[in-house]
Image 1 (cartoon, rainbow, N blue to C red):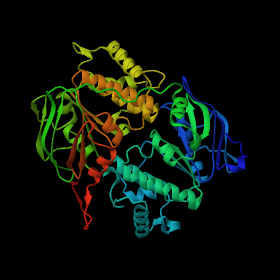
Image 2 (cartoon, rainbow, N blue to C red; image 1 turned 135 degrees about the vertical axis):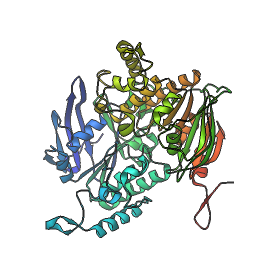
Image 3 (cartoon, rainbow, N blue to C red; image 1 turned 90 degrees about the vertical axis):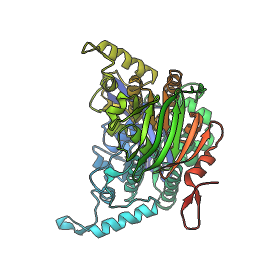
Image 4 (cartoon, rainbow, N blue to C red; image 1 turned 135 degrees about the horizontal axis):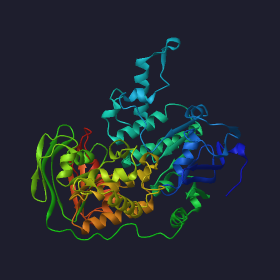
Length: 514
């Protein structure tokens, strides 16, 4: 590691310490960012990455330590202070005003004015600038569309576009690609390289997609248990070494050996239709089988999961669970029929953030966890603690509010909740989004255990490697239809991508690959 003077860094954090009740989140952590570099921040869930970024953003006050911007000591006591220093943040969790349209979200607080003294917004200029930026970053969205109607992936792209509306000195990206498909990721990487070269922007990049570390990063700082393990040039750091320093031990096998499925149906759907999203989908899921469903943004995979789970109403189609037709029209109806949906939007739909890990775990299982009308609190405590241990949820206790958890640990809490519900069919929508390498392995092992119990798993994922390694069959969706189905071992990531895109004709329309 090279020692440079403070003035050679665009951001320097020295000796940062942050404590929460019962937890030391950061312990004497130092970090430096050079102009025009992508500095990757790595660590397991709960290692302190997001806490460090929130100290830099002014969302948290450090108990000890100093922050320097371009060699000058600064006090960042609020998010506004961070903005004034040229710092922009894209968090793992969405931070948009759902009731406003895309353009108004992009320029919120920075609107072009017709009459500044009267705060009269120049609406024509606002929408023109928004459209220009969306086009520049290859984001195919209408700036007048209300954000609340967009998918999670589309909302993430809006957040990225918003961060790029100003001439920032530093852009912090916390899991920016966790819901993006490959084409959108590459567009984002091109923008990052452009801003590095043209404007000398420095990037702090947090990701659990380890291929991105080598594709995009210049240096990496590794945190473990709130402490700085070290800072390294990525070109000099072998992958196995990086992972071992991150987890504090040897790498274990990532993917389990999947047991063979049974011949009995867990789920069968026929002619599932919903205007604008699903165009007659048929699929069968066996007991003890994982079917991976993948595709590009807007292909319909999440919409398929939501329709089966009763979140969105169907225009047509039939759903059967273990051979019996169900006619549920709500999520609660789906749960009663043995279908549980693990949403990708954990913050809004997956958890009650002001309730504890324990209470969130118990909510869908209260009938099972009660006897003679009385809730068995001891049983709830024991099961919640068991899943907290199995999934390595980092928190002081099962009574910790889920709002206080890191994004990855929130995801684990969602998984625990539905594993405890003992459903016959589990729909995992991006089950490992934002989860570290050990957490992924733990979830995969639990999925394997569920298969041995005869549960059928429909896994909706934008991670092609995950789809190939953790599925008995892979279904590729395109424009609300099934474009291709592969048996395990038949396809590569390139095969999936080709089917997801389709064959582009001279008129610009996608056609099936032959």
